[in-house]
Image 1 (tube, helix red, strand yellow):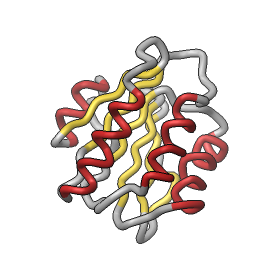
Image 2 (image 1 turned 90 degrees about the vertical axis):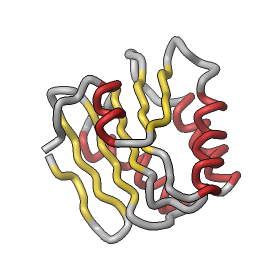
Image 3 (image 1 turned 90 degrees about the horizontal axis):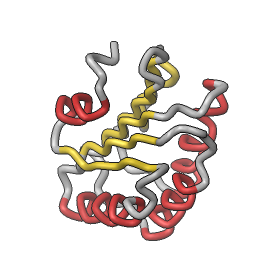
Length: 133
């Protein structure tokens, strides 16, 4: 199910796998970034337990947004384990940002499973998703 598709982000949701797929198309920060993460589950009426986040086109994530994302995931309201697959940025600074976020979140292994991937296909395999369309 397509949730949103604009010049900044494409959001799809696959109910069968309870997976949200975010494809970031351009730089976004601050309240705009936070709105996507906060409001998408509200629009869906559920908190997906699987997130596939494609950050290939992201240049950098500010330290403030990295900190916010860390707290967002740690306070994410679900009774199940959250599986988050990030598709790594093509940009050096974007890669460092994602590595930092992933490292911060790996501490809560009972609630959060998180991993960085170089391709969508490898991320989907790890998440046990056959296809999103």
